[in-house]
Image (cartoon, rainbow, N blue to C red; front, side):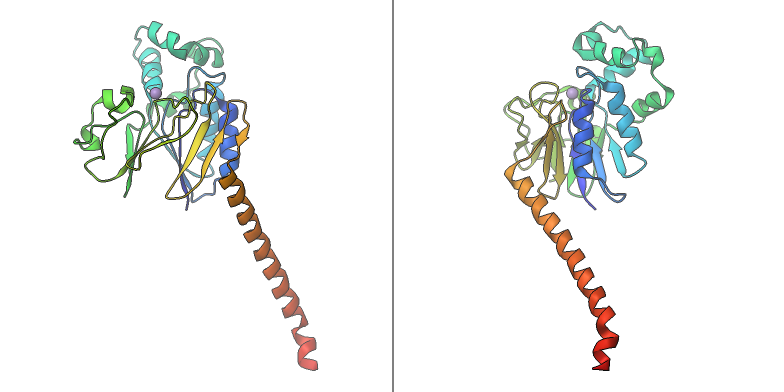
Length: 253
Ligand SMILES: [Mn+2]
């Protein structure tokens, strides 16, 4: 199986479509979304629809970002909407036809079921940040959803696990990789990319908000080798079937 983390989408549905297509997820693969699906970009509703559909054909883990915290605060708990609307919530409302009451129930269930973090053998996934000296189940909401990465960056987590985060946009569009800490919010809603980062692999797939996939020289080489491998396999299969087909005649000789 392959495992990918995908960073902050922020309504960039075209970028999401391109990245998922480039991953070509198989049923046994796992995709971990780091939150902030909505707000700012043009089509939050479409982004959620895509993730819900994706669940039918691969393993999907969805974390909560601060923008989903704000949406649920307004939509479910009736909180004042001024802060959220000013932080890109207006584009989300527009994508739902102009009123939060139009959010379909399967989307509300989606938002309700988001996880604060996801922890596996050697990796932790969380939207914003973490306190290195605190177990994940005891992290504060402020750390989990709101705290930006500012120098000095948090040190290695006490678990020794690598932590993958989003939330702090990297204006150069590049993944911030400090080994123990990786930030893959590569500023899709601005002039950067949506990033899919392979855990335990080498692939970094990026697409801009128009859906154009960025091909790094490394990924181009990888794809060529992969296709070459597929070509070899089919060639070997073809040779085998030819040899099997020839066997009777060769024993006659
Ligand atoms: Mn965020």
